[in-house]
Image (cartoon, rainbow, N blue to C red; front, side):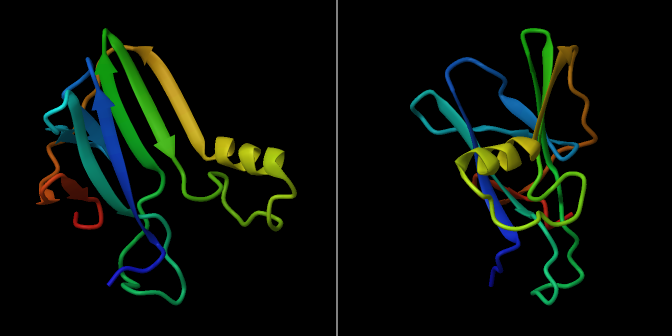
Length: 134
C-alpha cells in the first residue's frame, strides 16, 4: 500500500556522462537500458502526513542527487515542500506564482571537484533504490 507521501523519481542519462550518482549520500549505479540510456528509479517518502500510513517512517526531504563529470561536481536538491518550512499561503495565484514556488524547491550547485559517498544503495527491486529502507 502506498499513500500520497511516497514518490518515485526516474533518473536517466542519455549519451556520455557518469555511470553512477550519489543519492542521499550513497552511491547508486545507473542501469543500462540498451539504447545508450542509463537509468535508475528512486523511491522516497516526501513528507510525513498526519494521519498517514507508516507513522514511524520519516520523510527524506530534500532528495539530494550528486555527480561529477569533467572535473565538475554537481549537486541537485529537490524539496517536496518549502525548504524554509511552513505552508504556502494558499494555491498559486497564477502560472508565474506556481513557477516561483517550483524554483524555490530546486537548488543547484556546481563547483570543481569530485563527489564522496558513504557506501552503496542496494536495489530493492531491479532498477529501483528505496530510500525508505535504510
